[in-house]
Length: 204
Length: 206
Image 1: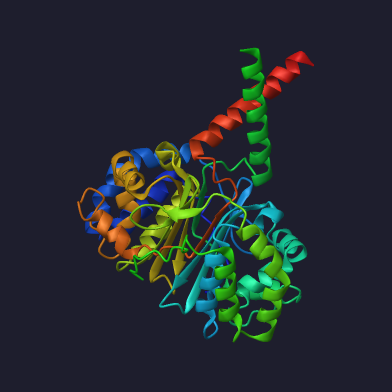
Image 2: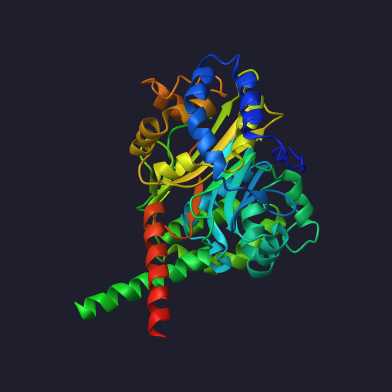
């Protein structure tokens, strides 16, 4: 769970070597073998112009401006019930809006309400500054959302980052449709778009 | 895992009812949790009564906010499936032009759990569950099979049973937040084009 090493793709292998490796791996997969053969031309093409992902800092992957963070925690006894109640009250009204670096986030309850999966897409090239911003702007909200998890030290405690790093599981792969757009830039583009429409209405 | 019932917020409850229910649940929470609830309680009830895009069902499973839905799936790997999928993902190294082609995926991640015994796949996508899956099945059939053949029991994307397999392993989120629930992937592309055109226009004027 707490593996911090990012298994980096082998940059020095040629595409042919990598495809060969895949063929060997898929040789004993009845369904996967044919599907792999069928998609090799497309794979080759993709690899030619490929986007690369990079490390998001201490843990996690980033593509362009957008990073992933995936955490699985254990609930304290009764914690799942309380968090479910809280989320039902909140619906989609999170103060994450104040932080303006969160593209999306989800809370998923696993294994009969014993574990919480928290997964988010966020802006920034640094895991550290992302967490700092949260801890500075909305510490009470975060304390509430995470209070039901084992070993949670509280967001004002300096050990909170170690706690998060301990439960974060770096993704093996991460895709973003618009890696060039932060949440703030998307808001700006929406405003520009609206202004253009109004302008055209006046002209027309 | 396979719970399909959506614990949807009861729409007819008032914010006050829900807030009261929450306070009851927190009565036996640890002291700091109670304190945290008290600190944010006013703000909570104030923005809970404000209308943002509501969270609704995304169709067969999952939830949606505005135009953007969540899909979270955890499935056991088939024998050697994790090694195959890891090699495939390393080869792709973040390149998913085929997913660009589908045009409804905001983001997606592949995470390996419990010593490579399970795959967590989590995505944010546009619209409803059924057409979303159909789209994948039609547009990038083989690519889907290469990826998900790593999982136990994957029937193949061409199989009529594929949707049942997905439903069986999908876990509906209890909470879901999207910064721009009004923007689909293709609308975002459009908005970016307009932004660029405006800049060029202003450059010419200026």
